Image 1: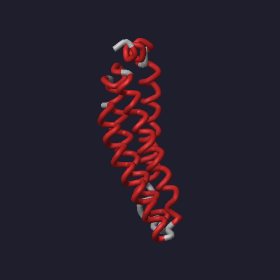
Image 2: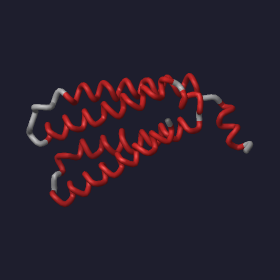
Image 3: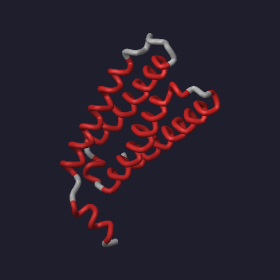
Image 4: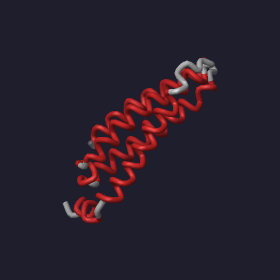
Length: 130
């Protein structure tokens, strides 16, 4: 799962940077919230989760890791689509925001539980003994 998190985070990075580029060219700074969330919850958080899952194989192989991945990657796009349209003055998809936000929140909680439960000192120590 760690590599999947890192690979999908690169997709979010490209989307976030592309949106930032569009915002600067079009002077569409009303989309700052979408830009920030994609970069923080997509690029940064997913990269860090991928690194931590790689460091802690028990967490990586647990069902919590898989559920975290899917909840996060369903919830974040839903939330960002809803927010994008809302910030453009179209509230027809605003209901995506709380649905997506709830999915991301649950994903983050599951991630925290997973790491707290499955991260062991010996996993990190074994990296330095190789």
